[in-house]
Image (cartoon, rainbow, N blue to C red; front, top):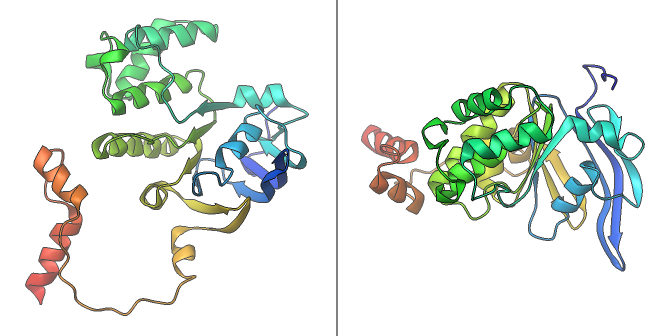
Length: 271
């Protein structure tokens, strides 16, 4: 297995098209993803996000166009692509009968890695699951299950990870846990391609955001670049009330007073 040049994009997508019978799902998709970055593919249900991820992970063949992952063509070098990636779907793929540690050990053994127990213990520590490692995964909360799922996908240290709508169905606290996990991964050099339909998720996590609409990328840029597409807002003082999420997190004791509420209070005092 050869190593691509360091300057090449971790993921390159050029003119990808895909149809299912008379339904054209992807109509010529183009984008690059820089190594070590978080790239969010933002779109509504049915926009083609999962179809594109399946093409990039070699589970589906495109009708036209080309794509490379970690320097390898997804068709000509599918085996090398699969060695370079990990794919985490919309729902956690953990064995709920096994403990968290047993899930990790199982995957390490399936990958024929040395010291599967040590690998499992290191990942439990890395994902703050050590205390729950001996418990059956079926007893885990949604956020814990998703963290375990991501930990399992990282066994073997893949340089690129695809997260297909990773926070679907999670409560606010669990979503924040997954967000922190994703940011930590990127901070350690892993390239993350994240698909989501949640605007706040893309805004919070992504280095770059591509908006997929009706099978094409209609905009691609940083958050600041996308915001500049609209006219500047008129600045007016409005007392900001806490959002429902602020209230929920404060009442459940997950966080202290939210930044937004504190900022609004401070601004009001200045006025």
